[in-house]
Length: 202
Image 1: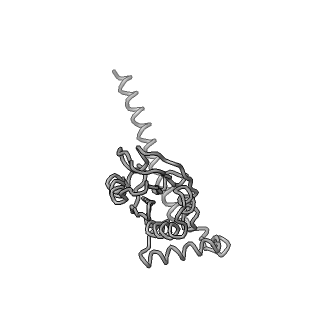
Image 2: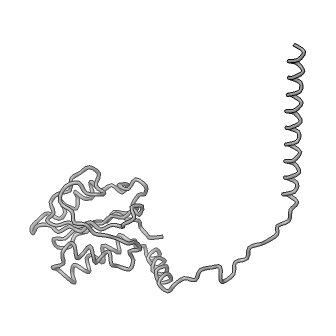
């Protein structure tokens, strides 16, 4: 019994001395850190700030102008779509999608893909039907909330009903990581343009 009590007292004294040593060194370290004056200061120099290229400056100015005028990516793209359709009435859906992706305002590497009636990206589980030709255009990087379509309808088709179908089934959160800020749909003759996108590129 005496041996057990002696062992317990020894263990307890070792533990207390270790705790005491630990606290002492912590105080010393804290004092040392608090009393150490800063050795260096950072000053921005001209060499450390990367210079903007002419293209970046133009792009930045265009974004500022667009924001000031209330112009968004979607409204700019739809205007380009209408202008191009008026300029080239016989343009195909593929050619229109290629043209829209080539615009300077598109700040990502994009790709196009022909689509058929059925389940399409961005439309929940609804099947999109009633078009003759369809082309999707989108970024190759999936984290950008942008998806666009150009559809060609059969002559005499009800464009308003087709547009209603797109609007009713559009899901701005089709991309789990991000959400589109605007949905724009417009028709010109027998062609329909649809896009879900951010309002501005950062």
